[in-house]
Image (tube, rainbow over the protein chains, first blue to last red):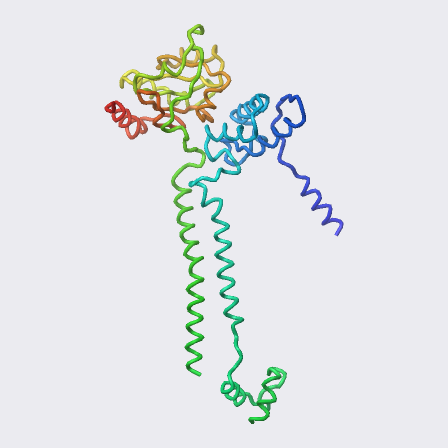
Length: 167
Length: 192
């Protein structure tokens, strides 16, 4: 149990690799924090699956420099993301903008989940739509169940009495 | 008895039909993904700059540092803009193709020396030849960023008004010229 807890804690401490060593100075902590958040959210255009924070490629260095410059100019986070999106498209944002092109990406899984739930409901309800047997059907059933041939423990108690009566 | 049997069979087939929906959805999804992954090299980003005007810039010329170039220098004719650098091996490979296009096809070719050093760049052109009308010195890569460039070589095709009509990532090849660039240039030239 202790080993498991240690493992979980160590797992949680794995952070995105700080492969990039840039000496960028910021006038305050708020800008520095925003910088780090933004370079985590921006994808390196060349690297397929690394963010700007974790990439050493030339374009990533240049783009980090731009994020730093834009933040010092006083732009908002959205303005920085817009700047990148205008030039590099949907690909550069780890959270793509919601547009006609990305609707399927955003809402597809949700729709699938809804579909699964609907189907699940309907299948489950079919099973539980067991209704009470009518008088006639009970008689038929009772005739079929002969407690002397079938071990009573396998028969629903409500039918045993009826069965005993009929047989 | 047989009546209830039929009832049970109907209910089962209704359930089965509904279960076919996710299966059908799955096959549609698989087909889309298979096609999507096969069509393009994932390393090549689609260009968001198509049909947008070439970005504004103000850069010095590689051989004439006193000369300042702006976007109006790219307008007036259907032209190619090539992003290149001395650290880029594919630029060496595509260079003879660019030389031929510039000298024989009568298409103006403008160069952007991207993230480079001007002394090295001038030496490089002496060694391999200079097909460019002029070269914009983009040592910080800022014009590159405005163009959505992420490596070299990259080549843009502009119409007369300086609107980007086509972008190619990677070396220009003779095949690319005959299949795409040449016909596009002809078409753009015939437009007003």
